[in-house]
Image 1 (cartoon, rainbow, N blue to C red):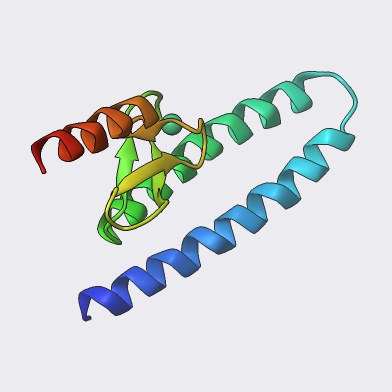
Image 2 (cartoon, rainbow, N blue to C red):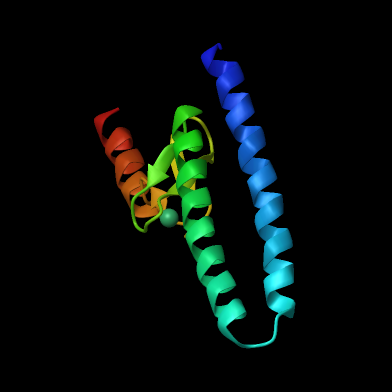
Length: 113
Ligand SMILES: [Zn+2]
């Protein structure tokens, strides 16, 4: 299998698991408090963490960088103009490089020009 079609397949599987997670979450929310609800919530939390890791690894394979400010790591998407090459975490909003680092960088460029 070509790497790109493998990534497409993995992406599809993650999407299916995402839907299944939401369906099971709806079911779990309707349960009355007790052993079954506690166990299903525990399962949901573990599944969520594993899904997040899978998404982060997929994101990395697709050329995104990962936010290391929490675990599981978040996928960072490129924001702003290309020349800045700034990334923002879709989970926590952390920016890399930060706005102040970018401001320093552009003032340095003006100085050196
Ligand atoms: Zn983050």
